[in-house]
Length: 258
Length: 246
Image 1: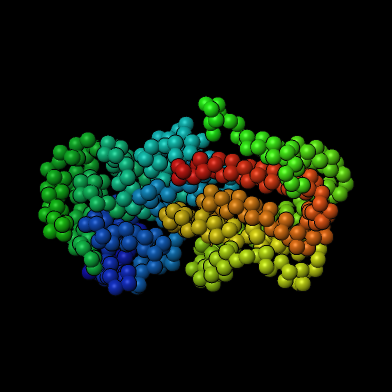
Image 2: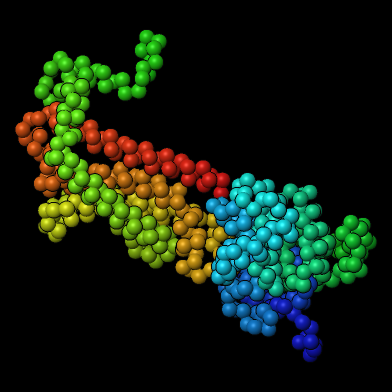
Protein backbone atom coordinates (compact mmCIF):
# COMPACT_ATOMS: atom_id res chain seq x y z
CA UNK A 1 0.00 0.00 0.00
CA UNK A 2 1.48 3.35 -0.94
CA UNK A 3 1.53 6.46 1.18
CA UNK A 4 -0.64 8.63 -0.98
CA UNK A 5 -3.62 6.34 -0.55
CA UNK A 6 -5.43 9.22 1.12
CA UNK A 7 -5.01 11.37 -1.97
CA UNK A 8 -7.44 9.20 -3.86
CA UNK A 9 -10.95 10.20 -2.99
CA UNK A 10 -12.77 7.10 -1.87
CA UNK A 11 -16.44 7.19 -1.00
CA UNK A 12 -16.10 3.94 0.91
CA UNK A 13 -12.98 2.18 2.14
CA UNK A 14 -13.12 -1.32 3.51
CA UNK A 15 -10.30 -2.78 5.64
CA UNK A 16 -9.84 -5.91 7.73
CA UNK A 17 -13.37 -7.18 7.36
CA UNK A 18 -14.01 -10.54 8.98
CA UNK A 19 -17.37 -12.22 9.01
CA UNK A 20 -18.26 -15.68 10.28
CA UNK A 21 -21.58 -17.46 10.11
CA UNK A 22 -21.17 -19.83 13.02
CA UNK A 23 -18.36 -22.14 11.98
CA UNK A 24 -18.27 -20.91 8.42
CA UNK A 25 -15.80 -18.19 7.59
CA UNK A 26 -17.48 -16.01 4.97
CA UNK A 27 -15.10 -13.06 4.72
CA UNK A 28 -11.48 -12.98 5.84
CA UNK A 29 -9.32 -9.86 6.00
CA UNK A 30 -11.14 -8.21 3.15
CA UNK A 31 -9.69 -4.99 1.74
CA UNK A 32 -11.28 -2.87 -0.96
CA UNK A 33 -11.65 0.77 -1.96
CA UNK A 34 -14.61 2.30 -3.72
CA UNK A 35 -13.51 5.46 -5.57
CA UNK A 36 -16.00 8.31 -5.45
CA UNK A 37 -18.25 8.74 -8.46
CA UNK A 38 -17.36 5.34 -9.89
CA UNK A 39 -19.19 2.08 -10.30
CA UNK A 40 -17.56 -0.88 -8.61
CA UNK A 41 -18.84 -4.40 -9.18
CA UNK A 42 -18.45 -7.21 -6.71
CA UNK A 43 -18.21 -10.33 -8.80
CA UNK A 44 -17.69 -13.91 -7.75
CA UNK A 45 -19.11 -17.41 -7.59
CA UNK A 46 -22.35 -17.84 -5.68
CA UNK A 47 -21.90 -18.07 -1.94
CA UNK A 48 -18.65 -16.09 -1.98
CA UNK A 49 -19.97 -13.38 0.30
CA UNK A 50 -20.66 -10.59 -2.19
CA UNK A 51 -24.05 -9.81 -0.72
CA UNK A 52 -22.66 -10.24 2.81
CA UNK A 53 -20.08 -7.55 2.11
CA UNK A 54 -22.70 -5.27 0.60
CA UNK A 55 -25.00 -5.64 3.62
CA UNK A 56 -22.09 -4.96 5.96
CA UNK A 57 -21.37 -1.74 4.07
CA UNK A 58 -25.09 -0.90 4.22
CA UNK A 59 -24.96 -1.32 7.99
CA UNK A 60 -27.62 -4.04 7.86
CA UNK A 61 -25.30 -6.82 8.97
CA UNK A 62 -22.67 -6.60 11.70
CA UNK A 63 -19.20 -7.87 10.80
CA UNK A 64 -17.12 -9.76 13.35
CA UNK A 65 -14.55 -7.06 12.96
CA UNK A 66 -14.14 -4.32 10.41
CA UNK A 67 -12.67 -0.95 9.65
CA UNK A 68 -15.03 0.66 7.21
CA UNK A 69 -15.08 4.33 6.37
CA UNK A 70 -17.96 5.99 4.54
CA UNK A 71 -17.00 9.52 3.51
CA UNK A 72 -14.06 9.18 5.90
CA UNK A 73 -16.43 8.56 8.80
CA UNK A 74 -16.43 5.21 10.60
CA UNK A 75 -19.46 3.09 9.76
CA UNK A 76 -21.95 2.85 12.61
CA UNK A 77 -25.08 1.50 10.94
CA UNK A 78 -27.49 2.38 8.16
CA UNK A 79 -27.33 6.03 7.18
CA UNK A 80 -28.80 8.51 4.72
CA UNK A 81 -25.49 8.58 2.81
CA UNK A 82 -26.23 5.10 1.46
CA UNK A 83 -29.30 3.72 -0.30
CA UNK A 84 -29.99 0.06 -1.02
CA UNK A 85 -31.63 -1.57 -4.03
CA UNK A 86 -32.87 -5.05 -3.24
CA UNK A 87 -32.75 -8.20 -5.31
CA UNK A 88 -36.40 -9.01 -4.57
CA UNK A 89 -37.39 -5.32 -4.90
CA UNK A 90 -38.69 -5.13 -1.28
CA UNK A 91 -41.73 -3.04 -2.22
CA UNK A 92 -44.60 -2.50 0.18
CA UNK A 93 -47.47 -4.53 -1.31
CA UNK A 94 -50.09 -2.34 0.37
CA UNK A 95 -48.73 0.92 -1.02
CA UNK A 96 -48.90 2.33 -4.53
CA UNK A 97 -45.86 3.32 -6.59
CA UNK A 98 -45.86 6.89 -5.34
CA UNK A 99 -45.95 5.88 -1.68
CA UNK A 100 -43.30 3.21 -2.26
CA UNK A 101 -40.91 5.64 -3.90
CA UNK A 102 -41.56 8.24 -1.19
CA UNK A 103 -41.10 5.72 1.64
CA UNK A 104 -37.39 6.42 2.14
CA UNK A 105 -38.07 10.16 2.31
CA UNK A 106 -40.92 9.55 4.73
CA UNK A 107 -38.54 7.76 7.09
CA UNK A 108 -36.17 10.72 6.79
CA UNK A 109 -39.00 12.95 7.99
CA UNK A 110 -39.65 14.84 4.75
CA UNK A 111 -43.11 16.46 4.67
CA UNK A 112 -45.73 14.74 2.55
CA UNK A 113 -46.16 17.28 -0.25
CA UNK A 114 -42.41 17.68 -0.61
CA UNK A 115 -41.61 13.98 -0.63
CA UNK A 116 -44.35 13.29 -3.15
CA UNK A 117 -43.01 15.98 -5.44
CA UNK A 118 -39.51 14.47 -5.23
CA UNK A 119 -40.90 10.98 -5.76
CA UNK A 120 -42.82 12.17 -8.85
CA UNK A 121 -39.59 13.44 -10.36
CA UNK A 122 -37.76 10.15 -9.90
CA UNK A 123 -40.73 8.11 -11.05
CA UNK A 124 -40.47 10.10 -14.24
CA UNK A 125 -36.70 9.60 -14.40
CA UNK A 126 -36.98 5.82 -14.28
CA UNK A 127 -39.70 5.87 -16.93
CA UNK A 128 -42.74 5.05 -14.82
CA UNK A 129 -44.75 8.20 -15.45
CA UNK A 130 -48.46 7.43 -15.28
CA UNK A 131 -47.98 4.46 -12.94
CA UNK A 132 -47.97 6.47 -9.69
CA UNK A 133 -51.27 5.05 -8.49
CA UNK A 134 -50.57 1.44 -9.44
CA UNK A 135 -49.75 -1.23 -6.88
CA UNK A 136 -46.67 -3.47 -7.05
CA UNK A 137 -48.68 -6.57 -7.96
CA UNK A 138 -49.95 -4.75 -11.04
CA UNK A 139 -46.42 -4.18 -12.36
CA UNK A 140 -43.98 -6.45 -14.20
CA UNK A 141 -40.74 -7.49 -12.51
CA UNK A 142 -38.77 -4.93 -14.48
CA UNK A 143 -41.14 -2.13 -13.51
CA UNK A 144 -41.02 -3.17 -9.87
CA UNK A 145 -37.27 -2.85 -9.86
CA UNK A 146 -37.59 0.59 -11.43
CA UNK A 147 -39.71 1.50 -8.42
CA UNK A 148 -36.97 0.15 -6.13
CA UNK A 149 -34.40 2.17 -8.02
CA UNK A 150 -36.50 5.34 -7.90
CA UNK A 151 -36.92 4.88 -4.14
CA UNK A 152 -33.14 4.59 -3.68
CA UNK A 153 -32.45 7.58 -5.95
CA UNK A 154 -35.04 9.82 -4.31
CA UNK A 155 -33.25 9.95 -0.95
CA UNK A 156 -30.26 11.36 -2.87
CA UNK A 157 -27.67 9.23 -1.11
CA UNK A 158 -24.08 9.53 -2.30
CA UNK A 159 -23.57 5.78 -2.37
CA UNK A 160 -25.97 3.41 -4.08
CA UNK A 161 -25.77 -0.23 -3.05
CA UNK A 162 -27.28 -2.60 -5.58
CA UNK A 163 -27.74 -6.24 -4.61
CA UNK A 164 -28.13 -8.27 -7.83
CA UNK A 165 -30.87 -5.84 -8.83
CA UNK A 166 -31.47 -7.33 -12.27
CA UNK A 167 -31.35 -11.03 -11.46
CA UNK A 168 -35.12 -11.34 -11.04
CA UNK A 169 -36.01 -9.71 -14.38
CA UNK A 170 -35.99 -11.24 -17.84
CA UNK A 171 -33.00 -11.07 -20.16
CA UNK A 172 -34.27 -8.33 -22.47
CA UNK A 173 -35.38 -6.10 -19.62
CA UNK A 174 -32.03 -6.78 -18.03
CA UNK A 175 -30.12 -5.48 -21.06
CA UNK A 176 -32.19 -2.32 -21.01
CA UNK A 177 -31.47 -1.96 -17.29
CA UNK A 178 -27.74 -2.33 -17.88
CA UNK A 179 -27.80 0.44 -20.45
CA UNK A 180 -29.85 2.60 -18.10
CA UNK A 181 -27.45 1.93 -15.24
CA UNK A 182 -24.51 2.92 -17.44
CA UNK A 183 -26.35 6.10 -18.34
CA UNK A 184 -27.17 6.75 -14.68
CA UNK A 185 -23.57 6.16 -13.56
CA UNK A 186 -22.33 8.64 -16.17
CA UNK A 187 -24.86 11.33 -15.36
CA UNK A 188 -25.33 11.13 -11.62
CA UNK A 189 -22.32 11.94 -9.52
CA UNK A 190 -22.85 8.94 -7.29
CA UNK A 191 -20.78 6.00 -6.16
CA UNK A 192 -22.28 2.67 -7.14
CA UNK A 193 -21.52 -0.63 -5.47
CA UNK A 194 -23.02 -3.33 -7.60
CA UNK A 195 -23.26 -7.01 -6.74
CA UNK A 196 -23.74 -9.35 -9.66
CA UNK A 197 -22.98 -12.91 -10.70
CA UNK A 198 -22.96 -12.06 -14.38
CA UNK A 199 -19.45 -11.53 -15.78
CA UNK A 200 -20.70 -9.71 -18.90
CA UNK A 201 -22.88 -7.43 -16.82
CA UNK A 202 -20.04 -6.54 -14.44
CA UNK A 203 -17.59 -5.74 -17.25
CA UNK A 204 -20.24 -3.87 -19.22
CA UNK A 205 -21.21 -1.38 -16.52
CA UNK A 206 -18.20 -1.12 -14.19
CA UNK A 207 -15.33 1.29 -13.78
CA UNK A 208 -13.80 -1.31 -11.49
CA UNK A 209 -14.55 -5.02 -11.08
CA UNK A 210 -13.53 -6.63 -7.79
CA UNK A 211 -13.21 -10.36 -8.15
CA UNK A 212 -14.06 -12.27 -4.98
CA UNK A 213 -13.15 -15.93 -4.75
CA UNK A 214 -14.82 -18.65 -2.77
CA UNK A 215 -15.03 -18.83 1.03
CA UNK A 216 -13.38 -17.50 3.04
CA UNK A 217 -13.40 -14.78 0.49
CA UNK A 218 -11.20 -11.79 -0.09
CA UNK A 219 -10.57 -9.70 -3.15
CA UNK A 220 -8.37 -11.74 -5.47
CA UNK A 221 -8.12 -9.26 -8.31
CA UNK A 222 -9.25 -5.79 -9.31
CA UNK A 223 -9.85 -5.15 -12.97
CA UNK A 224 -10.39 -1.70 -14.38
CA UNK A 225 -11.94 -1.79 -17.86
CA UNK A 226 -10.87 1.63 -19.11
CA UNK A 227 -10.52 1.42 -22.87
CA UNK A 228 -14.20 1.34 -23.77
CA UNK A 229 -15.76 3.42 -20.99
CA UNK A 230 -16.25 6.42 -23.25
CA UNK A 231 -17.89 4.37 -25.99
CA UNK A 232 -21.62 4.38 -26.50
CA UNK A 233 -23.75 1.63 -24.97
CA UNK A 234 -24.28 -0.18 -28.24
CA UNK A 235 -20.66 -0.76 -29.23
CA UNK A 236 -19.21 -1.85 -25.87
CA UNK A 237 -20.21 -5.47 -26.36
CA UNK A 238 -18.16 -5.60 -29.58
CA UNK A 239 -15.07 -4.01 -28.09
CA UNK A 240 -12.01 -6.35 -28.08
CA UNK A 241 -10.97 -5.23 -24.59
CA UNK A 242 -14.45 -5.97 -23.27
CA UNK A 243 -14.31 -9.46 -24.75
CA UNK A 244 -10.78 -10.07 -23.45
CA UNK A 245 -11.73 -9.10 -19.91
CA UNK A 246 -14.81 -11.31 -19.96
CA UNK A 247 -12.70 -14.29 -21.06
CA UNK A 248 -10.02 -13.51 -18.47
CA UNK A 249 -12.51 -13.32 -15.60
CA UNK A 250 -14.16 -16.55 -16.67
CA UNK A 251 -10.74 -18.24 -16.69
CA UNK A 252 -10.25 -17.16 -13.05
CA UNK A 253 -13.71 -18.15 -11.94
CA UNK A 254 -14.31 -21.42 -13.77
CA UNK A 255 -12.34 -23.53 -11.31
CA UNK A 256 -14.77 -22.45 -8.57
CA UNK A 257 -17.91 -23.44 -10.43
CA UNK A 258 -19.02 -27.02 -10.09
CA UNK B 1 -78.90 -31.47 -1.31
CA UNK B 2 -81.25 -32.92 -3.91
CA UNK B 3 -84.42 -34.83 -3.16
CA UNK B 4 -86.25 -36.61 -6.00
CA UNK B 5 -84.38 -34.43 -8.45
CA UNK B 6 -85.33 -31.16 -6.75
CA UNK B 7 -82.72 -28.82 -5.34
CA UNK B 8 -83.56 -28.22 -1.69
CA UNK B 9 -82.92 -24.74 -0.35
CA UNK B 10 -80.29 -24.32 2.33
CA UNK B 11 -81.43 -25.06 5.88
CA UNK B 12 -84.45 -27.01 4.59
CA UNK B 13 -83.87 -29.40 7.47
CA UNK B 14 -85.68 -26.76 9.51
CA UNK B 15 -88.91 -27.97 7.88
CA UNK B 16 -88.32 -31.32 9.53
CA UNK B 17 -87.99 -29.53 12.85
CA UNK B 18 -91.31 -27.79 12.29
CA UNK B 19 -93.02 -31.12 11.53
CA UNK B 20 -91.53 -32.80 14.58
CA UNK B 21 -92.53 -29.80 16.68
CA UNK B 22 -96.11 -29.81 15.39
CA UNK B 23 -96.44 -33.53 16.24
CA UNK B 24 -95.78 -32.56 19.88
CA UNK B 25 -93.41 -35.42 20.72
CA UNK B 26 -91.87 -33.50 23.56
CA UNK B 27 -92.34 -30.20 25.29
CA UNK B 28 -88.63 -29.68 24.77
CA UNK B 29 -88.99 -29.18 21.03
CA UNK B 30 -91.72 -26.68 20.20
CA UNK B 31 -92.45 -25.99 16.52
CA UNK B 32 -90.11 -23.57 14.79
CA UNK B 33 -92.91 -21.22 13.85
CA UNK B 34 -94.00 -20.95 17.47
CA UNK B 35 -90.48 -19.95 18.41
CA UNK B 36 -90.45 -17.16 15.87
CA UNK B 37 -93.79 -15.92 17.13
CA UNK B 38 -92.38 -15.93 20.66
CA UNK B 39 -89.23 -14.29 19.39
CA UNK B 40 -91.21 -11.38 17.99
CA UNK B 41 -93.25 -11.25 21.17
CA UNK B 42 -90.34 -11.08 23.57
CA UNK B 43 -88.00 -9.06 21.40
CA UNK B 44 -89.86 -5.91 22.33
CA UNK B 45 -90.01 -6.59 26.05
CA UNK B 46 -87.74 -4.57 28.25
CA UNK B 47 -86.25 -7.68 29.87
CA UNK B 48 -85.04 -8.90 26.51
CA UNK B 49 -83.79 -5.54 25.34
CA UNK B 50 -81.94 -5.03 28.57
CA UNK B 51 -80.34 -8.46 28.30
CA UNK B 52 -79.32 -7.64 24.76
CA UNK B 53 -77.83 -4.33 25.81
CA UNK B 54 -75.91 -5.86 28.69
CA UNK B 55 -74.59 -8.67 26.51
CA UNK B 56 -73.65 -6.32 23.72
CA UNK B 57 -71.76 -4.12 26.12
CA UNK B 58 -69.87 -7.04 27.67
CA UNK B 59 -69.16 -8.51 24.28
CA UNK B 60 -67.75 -5.36 22.73
CA UNK B 61 -65.73 -4.24 25.71
CA UNK B 62 -64.38 -7.79 26.06
CA UNK B 63 -63.42 -8.24 22.42
CA UNK B 64 -62.10 -4.70 22.19
CA UNK B 65 -59.70 -5.35 25.07
CA UNK B 66 -58.74 -8.69 23.54
CA UNK B 67 -57.86 -6.97 20.25
CA UNK B 68 -56.10 -3.98 21.76
CA UNK B 69 -53.99 -6.16 24.05
CA UNK B 70 -53.74 -9.26 21.87
CA UNK B 71 -52.47 -7.76 18.60
CA UNK B 72 -49.53 -5.78 20.06
CA UNK B 73 -48.53 -8.69 22.31
CA UNK B 74 -48.64 -11.08 19.35
CA UNK B 75 -46.61 -8.71 17.17
CA UNK B 76 -44.02 -8.24 19.90
CA UNK B 77 -43.80 -12.02 20.34
CA UNK B 78 -43.20 -12.38 16.63
CA UNK B 79 -40.44 -9.79 16.77
CA UNK B 80 -38.67 -10.78 19.97
CA UNK B 81 -37.29 -14.24 20.48
CA UNK B 82 -37.02 -13.70 24.23
CA UNK B 83 -40.62 -12.57 24.67
CA UNK B 84 -41.76 -15.40 22.46
CA UNK B 85 -40.05 -18.08 24.52
CA UNK B 86 -41.36 -16.48 27.68
CA UNK B 87 -45.01 -16.21 26.64
CA UNK B 88 -45.68 -18.86 24.00
CA UNK B 89 -46.16 -21.81 26.41
CA UNK B 90 -48.69 -19.78 28.39
CA UNK B 91 -50.56 -18.65 25.31
CA UNK B 92 -50.78 -22.22 24.04
CA UNK B 93 -51.90 -23.46 27.44
CA UNK B 94 -54.68 -20.89 27.79
CA UNK B 95 -55.76 -21.44 24.20
CA UNK B 96 -56.47 -25.10 24.84
CA UNK B 97 -57.46 -24.83 28.49
CA UNK B 98 -61.12 -25.22 29.52
CA UNK B 99 -61.57 -21.58 30.44
CA UNK B 100 -65.05 -22.25 31.76
CA UNK B 101 -63.40 -23.71 34.81
CA UNK B 102 -61.72 -20.37 35.44
CA UNK B 103 -64.96 -18.41 35.62
CA UNK B 104 -65.67 -19.23 39.29
CA UNK B 105 -62.18 -18.01 40.13
CA UNK B 106 -62.87 -14.79 38.24
CA UNK B 107 -66.10 -14.42 40.16
CA UNK B 108 -64.21 -14.61 43.41
CA UNK B 109 -61.64 -12.11 42.17
CA UNK B 110 -63.86 -9.64 40.36
CA UNK B 111 -67.28 -10.12 41.83
CA UNK B 112 -70.57 -11.31 40.37
CA UNK B 113 -71.08 -8.48 37.95
CA UNK B 114 -70.17 -7.12 34.59
CA UNK B 115 -66.45 -7.05 35.28
CA UNK B 116 -66.20 -10.83 35.51
CA UNK B 117 -68.21 -11.28 32.32
CA UNK B 118 -66.03 -8.86 30.40
CA UNK B 119 -62.87 -10.56 31.61
CA UNK B 120 -64.27 -13.98 30.69
CA UNK B 121 -65.04 -12.69 27.20
CA UNK B 122 -61.54 -11.27 26.83
CA UNK B 123 -59.98 -14.50 28.07
CA UNK B 124 -61.90 -16.51 25.51
CA UNK B 125 -60.95 -14.26 22.61
CA UNK B 126 -57.44 -13.08 23.28
CA UNK B 127 -55.22 -16.16 22.87
CA UNK B 128 -56.01 -16.95 19.28
CA UNK B 129 -55.57 -13.26 18.42
CA UNK B 130 -52.12 -13.29 20.03
CA UNK B 131 -51.14 -16.49 18.25
CA UNK B 132 -52.31 -15.33 14.83
CA UNK B 133 -50.70 -11.90 15.14
CA UNK B 134 -47.47 -13.65 16.05
CA UNK B 135 -47.76 -15.91 12.99
CA UNK B 136 -48.56 -12.90 10.83
CA UNK B 137 -45.39 -11.13 11.89
CA UNK B 138 -43.24 -14.21 11.46
CA UNK B 139 -44.17 -14.60 7.80
CA UNK B 140 -43.27 -11.01 6.89
CA UNK B 141 -40.76 -10.78 4.09
CA UNK B 142 -37.39 -10.19 5.77
CA UNK B 143 -36.23 -7.86 3.06
CA UNK B 144 -39.07 -5.42 3.85
CA UNK B 145 -37.61 -5.09 7.33
CA UNK B 146 -34.10 -4.71 5.92
CA UNK B 147 -35.40 -2.15 3.45
CA UNK B 148 -36.93 -0.07 6.24
CA UNK B 149 -33.75 -0.31 8.30
CA UNK B 150 -31.58 0.67 5.34
CA UNK B 151 -33.60 3.87 5.06
CA UNK B 152 -32.99 4.57 8.71
CA UNK B 153 -36.19 3.23 10.27
CA UNK B 154 -36.16 3.07 14.06
CA UNK B 155 -37.71 0.01 15.72
CA UNK B 156 -40.79 2.15 16.33
CA UNK B 157 -40.97 3.12 12.63
CA UNK B 158 -40.61 -0.53 11.66
CA UNK B 159 -43.45 -1.47 14.01
CA UNK B 160 -45.91 1.14 12.77
CA UNK B 161 -44.91 1.29 9.11
CA UNK B 162 -44.10 -2.35 8.33
CA UNK B 163 -45.27 -4.88 10.92
CA UNK B 164 -48.71 -3.39 11.50
CA UNK B 165 -49.32 -3.26 7.74
CA UNK B 166 -47.84 -6.55 6.64
CA UNK B 167 -49.54 -8.88 9.07
CA UNK B 168 -53.28 -8.00 8.75
CA UNK B 169 -54.51 -11.09 6.85
CA UNK B 170 -53.34 -13.37 9.65
CA UNK B 171 -54.31 -10.90 12.36
CA UNK B 172 -57.81 -10.58 10.91
CA UNK B 173 -58.16 -14.36 10.79
CA UNK B 174 -57.28 -14.40 14.49
CA UNK B 175 -59.76 -11.64 15.25
CA UNK B 176 -62.54 -13.53 13.47
CA UNK B 177 -61.96 -16.72 15.46
CA UNK B 178 -61.50 -14.55 18.55
CA UNK B 179 -64.96 -13.01 18.02
CA UNK B 180 -66.54 -16.43 17.68
CA UNK B 181 -64.87 -17.55 20.87
CA UNK B 182 -65.94 -14.31 22.54
CA UNK B 183 -69.58 -15.17 21.85
CA UNK B 184 -68.97 -18.36 23.80
CA UNK B 185 -67.20 -16.41 26.49
CA UNK B 186 -69.87 -13.83 27.02
CA UNK B 187 -72.66 -16.43 27.20
CA UNK B 188 -70.74 -18.85 29.40
CA UNK B 189 -69.82 -15.99 31.69
CA UNK B 190 -73.44 -14.91 31.94
CA UNK B 191 -74.70 -18.44 32.43
CA UNK B 192 -72.31 -19.17 35.25
CA UNK B 193 -72.78 -15.84 36.91
CA UNK B 194 -76.43 -16.00 35.80
CA UNK B 195 -77.78 -12.83 37.26
CA UNK B 196 -77.36 -10.55 34.27
CA UNK B 197 -78.06 -10.50 30.55
CA UNK B 198 -79.00 -13.53 28.54
CA UNK B 199 -77.64 -15.78 31.26
CA UNK B 200 -80.39 -14.55 33.55
CA UNK B 201 -82.98 -15.01 30.79
CA UNK B 202 -81.84 -18.58 30.12
CA UNK B 203 -81.98 -19.30 33.79
CA UNK B 204 -85.45 -17.81 34.03
CA UNK B 205 -86.89 -19.57 30.99
CA UNK B 206 -85.39 -23.01 31.56
CA UNK B 207 -86.33 -23.13 35.24
CA UNK B 208 -89.90 -22.25 34.30
CA UNK B 209 -89.99 -24.67 31.35
CA UNK B 210 -90.65 -21.84 28.89
CA UNK B 211 -89.12 -23.74 26.01
CA UNK B 212 -90.40 -21.48 23.25
CA UNK B 213 -88.83 -18.50 24.97
CA UNK B 214 -85.66 -20.43 25.63
CA UNK B 215 -85.27 -21.36 21.98
CA UNK B 216 -86.16 -17.88 20.79
CA UNK B 217 -83.29 -16.39 22.76
CA UNK B 218 -80.99 -19.11 21.50
CA UNK B 219 -81.92 -18.33 17.90
CA UNK B 220 -81.09 -14.69 18.45
CA UNK B 221 -77.68 -15.62 19.80
CA UNK B 222 -76.98 -18.02 16.93
CA UNK B 223 -77.96 -15.38 14.42
CA UNK B 224 -75.76 -12.74 16.03
CA UNK B 225 -72.74 -15.05 16.22
CA UNK B 226 -73.23 -16.18 12.63
CA UNK B 227 -73.59 -12.63 11.33
CA UNK B 228 -70.44 -11.44 13.09
CA UNK B 229 -68.43 -14.41 11.83
CA UNK B 230 -69.67 -13.97 8.25
CA UNK B 231 -68.94 -10.26 8.29
CA UNK B 232 -65.37 -10.84 9.45
CA UNK B 233 -64.88 -13.67 6.95
CA UNK B 234 -65.97 -11.27 4.22
CA UNK B 235 -63.49 -8.67 5.46
CA UNK B 236 -60.79 -11.32 5.59
CA UNK B 237 -61.41 -12.33 1.97
CA UNK B 238 -61.06 -8.72 0.92
CA UNK B 239 -57.72 -8.40 2.68
CA UNK B 240 -56.55 -11.78 1.37
CA UNK B 241 -57.19 -10.49 -2.10
CA UNK B 242 -54.24 -8.15 -1.90
CA UNK B 243 -52.29 -10.39 0.48
CA UNK B 244 -52.22 -13.16 -2.11
CA UNK B 245 -50.37 -10.83 -4.40
CA UNK B 246 -47.64 -9.71 -2.08
